[in-house]
Structure formats: structure tokens, C-alpha cells
Amino acid sequence: MSSLIRWKSSTAALIAMAITTGAVTPLFAFAPAQAQFNINQPRTVTIPANVTLPVTYEKEKVIVNPGERLPLTLRIANDIIDSNRNVLIPARTEVVGELEPVSINSGYYNENKRGVRFVARELIFASGKRQQIYANSRTISETQRISKGTDTRKVLTDAAIGAGAASVISLLTGNKKIEVLEPVGGAAAGALASVLLRKKQVDVFVLRPEDDLDIILQSNLVLSRN
Image (cartoon, rainbow, N blue to C red; front, side):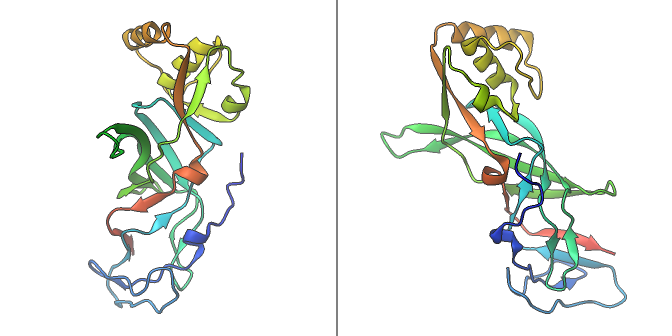
């Protein structure tokens, strides 16, 4: 698994913003500037929409079926700091959300293509404090094909696997020891097996969190700094 201590250029630049008691406007995004303080009052800091926050995960890969939803908790990869090097979001802060399916209109005969993205719902700080967040990753549409009899050891190494994808790979390859992130219900598993018995191959999403799942703020993120 790649190192958790990494520094991405998209977020390594300093985030400069105003610090006041209400909703604030950033001075400059990704450029040093003097923050504005409101003395003797509780302070808030706003990280503006469209800022990208780097994430990391305990596994190198996450594998899911097209159409599969999967609860997932990532972590902030690096300290998010302001222009005075105050830490706004510490590294290792949890990012709670889920992988969700996305339908992409390809524009070719109005054909819809399947994709997947991570949608962040909440930050959980080391202190236990929770902060609502509206952010998501880019949409990933590229899949990897798994066929009957395929040796999947390379694909499965250091991978977290959704129940749907695990069932698919197990049935096609005969590997009965695949560990899943959450179990699939008996009826659903039976229906899935019935479909797969008629197939010789299937496509799955193989996501690399540190490359594919960095989150982009969809609205301003207002943090309190008392």
C-alpha cells in the first residue's frame, strides 16, 4: 500500500481565506495571504467550494460492481492548513460516505454508461467532533474485466471488496476465500448467482482511493475555531 504520508500538488498549496464569525469569502484560493481575524469572538474559517481535499484509505484498492452501493470511510491524507500554517483539518480525519453508482449519458445513441463516485457526508475529527460536508470525488467509468478461470491474485491483492463484486469474482473464478466489506443478503446472493451462471465474464470497478477518490467540495465548508 502506498504511503499515507504524501503531499499532492493540488492541495499542498496554502489555502488562504478570511476568518470571521459568519459566512466568509476566501481572499485567494491556493495562494498565501493574510487572514482576517475578529478579536474576542468565536471564529469560523471557510474553505471554499471547488477546493480538492486529498484522501487515503487502509487498502490500496476498492473493488465494486457497476450499480453497487458501498459505505466507505476514507481519511484526509495531509494536514489542510491556512496561509499562517494553522491546521484546519488534521491529517487522518475520517471522511464518512459511500460509493454510489452514476449513470453517464455518453451522447452516443443516448446510451447511458455506468460509473461510480465517492460521496462524502461527514468529517469525524480525532476529538469525536462531527462536521457535515458536501463533497464528492470525480466519476470513474473505466472497468476491469474478470473472466471465468482468471487468476485474480494480482487484482485482489490489498483490495477491499464490495459484496456484489466479491460474489461475482468468487463465482467466476472459484475463489471462495474473498473477504468482503459487508455481506450480501441470501436472496440477493441467490439472484446474483443465477445471473452469473449464464455469464463467462463480468466487468468491475477497481478504484485506487489515493488516485481516484480525492474529494471536491460542492459547497463552502465552514469550520469553527473557538
